Amino acid sequence: MGIICGGGLVICLIPMMTMLPVLLLRGRQNVIDLQGGEIAKHRARIENIWLKRPKAVIIITLVLCILAGIQIRRVYFDYNLLHMQSAGLPAVEFEEKLINANTVGTNTTAKSVLFGAVIATNLEEAIALERQLTNLPSVGGVESITRFLAEDQSRKLQIIGELKRNLADIRFQEQDTGPLNAPELSSTLYSTGGYLGNAVEATQKEDPALCKQLASLQQAIADLRKGMLEGTEAQVQAHAAKLAIFQQALFDDIHDTFEALRNQDDSSRLAIKDLPLALQHRFIGVTKKYLLMVYPKEDVWQRENQKKFIDDVVKIYPDVTGTPVQLYHYTDLLKRSYEEAARYSLVAIALLVFIHFRSPLTVALALLPVGIGFLWLGGIMGWLGIPLNPANIMTLPLVIGIGVTNGIHILNRFAEEQTANILARSTGKAVLVSGLTAIAGFGSLLLAQHRGIKSLGLVMSIGLATCMIAGLTLLPALLNWFVRSDAEKKNRPSAVNAQPTLGREEPR
Image 1 (cartoon, rainbow, N blue to C red):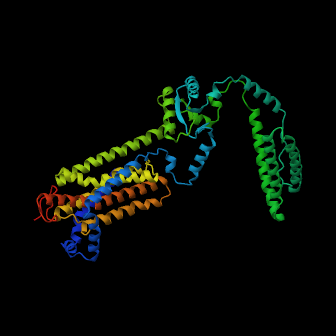
Image 2 (tube, rainbow, N blue to C red; image 1 turned 45 degrees about the vertical axis):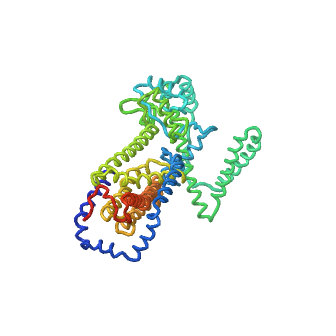
Image 3 (cartoon, rainbow, N blue to C red; image 1 turned 180 degrees about the horizontal axis):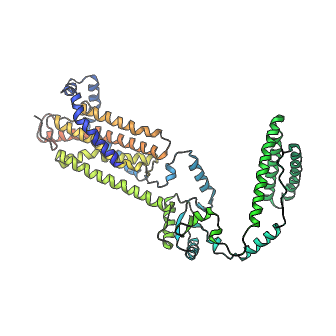
């Protein structure tokens, strides 16, 4: 993003410094400024409201800063990436349903939907790690194939042998591939529903759970009878054909199941080659290492739960990875990266402003609108309950880079024309229009369904607006106050021509 944005601005700078001046009428803009007009006079009257009252503007600004400082403490960083996704997205809704479905009592979950990955080099190490990980307080469970390979299988082998002997004499008749007799099936289903009704009455008091299941099955049979006999004769035949296809598929599945049970190898314990390929590919790597899927007990999308889970597992296995670990380090790295970018951009901008104006006071004045704007932005975010997140935190360097241009333009005009009246001039109008266009551009992101992108547009628009307001009101008022103070010290009747140069040479 930095390469694209920075490189794009450099490319845009070339035609702006070469082709654009050629297209402009020479000196025409200065004539427009001198001629003014009703609109310019109207802007000047509005600007005089705060230019003539610099102390009041400063007091109001300080009050707003104090209020913003109170609210800014409520701003926090939201690490939960689910809160950034589009509202109503099916994947997010099901994720939240799974989390809520596992919630027990005190906001703990029986098993999270995400898991950490632990790798064991052999089966013995996998068994030992699983035993240790299962006892951790933040672990809800561990999934692996160790339970298939390491447990005592003698009892299971006996059961398999008995099943094979019991199934050896069972033979299936050839399937009836003819059309299904819908009335006969309906009669059979009706009788079955009657038996289920008797079972519902019998289990109603002794086993309510079983009663509920039987009642559901009875209702399903009734719905099937109603659906298969509805409509015209052609429709009933079509329903019968579909049921015949389902019946054939059902019996094929039952036949395959019986064949699989009859062909089980009970001569030795279960080995890796006996496992289904899906299990082998999931839990055993190409290097024959074993995967242990460690599930957190609590909602691992929450930052504090991530840290607790990782800290516990690292004590047993320092090289744990998986989605919870990746989310924890990714969001932390992203947050620190943009904070560092904001600091670097502030230092670079301050250096460039100092080289341009050659005055520490002017550097402070140029950065003042950005500082005030940032403070107001934080106050508004705290007041509205807007948190920082991995998407909108990128606004930190962007607001600094865009917002500081307001102060630079205003100070340049101030140094050239020796007047604090900015809004009636082309510079003030340019600052206002460029600020509004930037706000409109980033404000269009508010239409996005992705909540992270939407919050980026909201925070960026508010930040640009606060920096622009501070630049067009507080900075000219301060400059006018400096002029008045300098004029009073020199006993000059007018403050208009008593302007300090702010690190620039006096214009001739």
